[in-house]
Image 1 (cartoon, one colour):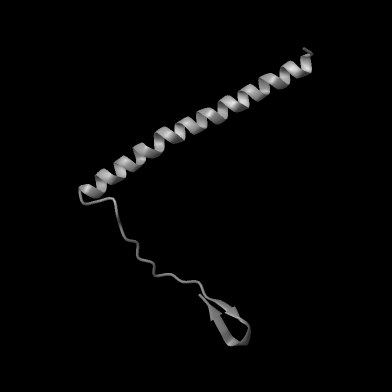
Image 2 (cartoon, one colour):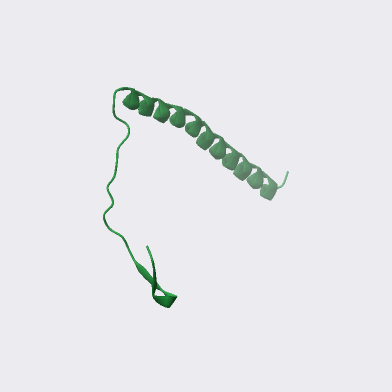
Length: 67
């Protein structure tokens, strides 16, 4: 095996291991986050409201406005 192909093999292994690690982390974190949210909803929280009172108006052709 040449030095270049050995280096390419190592790079591919690192990339694959990194992708697997990210996927495994997502598989562990998402259910934990969902469980915490469900617990908060069961205890009466976990949901909220946000009041928006600021609008941006853009003037369009023909004296029309877009919000």
